[in-house]
Length: 301
Picture 1 (cartoon, rainbow, N blue to C red):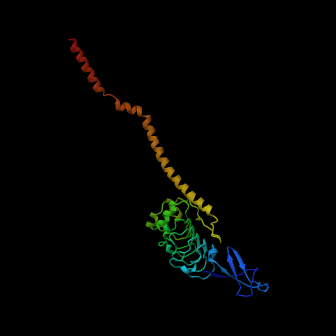
Picture 2: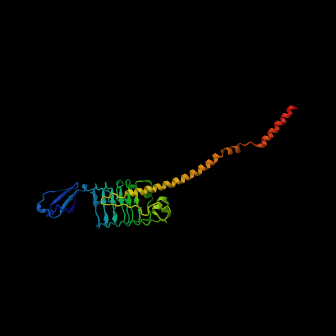
Picture 3: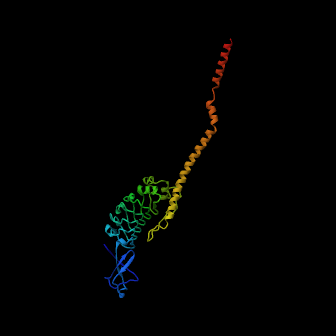
C-alpha cells in the first residue's frame, strides 16, 4: 500500500497536481516533467518500507489506533510530541516490529499500557515525560527486555510497580528518569520496595544520605533521539553503585577489624590461658607427696 504525502521542495515545483514523483531510499524520481511545471508543489508517493523515522509534532491527534502506522514495518523511530494525545488504543504499535525509539512527550496521556506493543518488541528508549500519567500499574515492563532508557519525568506519579524497581536495581544498563513527580514517601508499602539508594533518589528529603545530585539526570531527545547526555546518567548510576559498595565495605571492614582485635587478644594471651587451664592442683600434689613419704617409711621399717 502506498501512502500519499505532499512535500514542499524548493527545486521541484509542479503546476499540475496530476504529476507524481516517487520516493525510494531517500531519492525522489519524477517522470514526464515540463519546464513550466517546476513552480509549485510536488505530490510524492511514499513507500512505507522506505521510512525509518517519522515525526509528527505540534498537531491535534487525540487518539491513536492500530491502522494509523501498521504499514510502517521498518520504522525505528516514532516521534509524536505535542500532538494533544490523550488515548492510545490497544495494539496500536503491534505492527511496528522494528520500532526502537518512541517519543510521546508533551501530551495529555493519563495512563500508559503495555498492551499497545507486541510482547516481542525491540524498544530501547521510551519518553513519556510531560504528561498526566498517575500510575504505571498496567505497564508490564517484563515485556520490554531490550528497554534501556525510560523517561517518566514531569508526570503525576506517586509510586512505581515493584517490577520496574527490580529492573532498575538489577540491570546496570537500564536508566529511569524520574524527576518532578509527587512521589509519596509517606506510603510504607511504597517505601518497603525501595532500598537505601532508591529512597535517596525518590525521596530526597526523606534521608540524610545526600549522595545523589540535587537535580535528577535528564535526557534530551532530539530529532534523531539518541540521548545526548547518557554518559552523565551512567556516571550518576555508577556513583550510586559505588556508594552502595563503600557502605557495605565499611560495615564488613568494621566487623572484621573488631573480630581481628579479639582474635589478637586471645592469641596474645594463649600461653597464660593454657597455664590457667593446665595448672596442676597444688593440694592434690601435696597429698600425693605425703602418701609417697609414708610409703617410704613403711618400707624402711
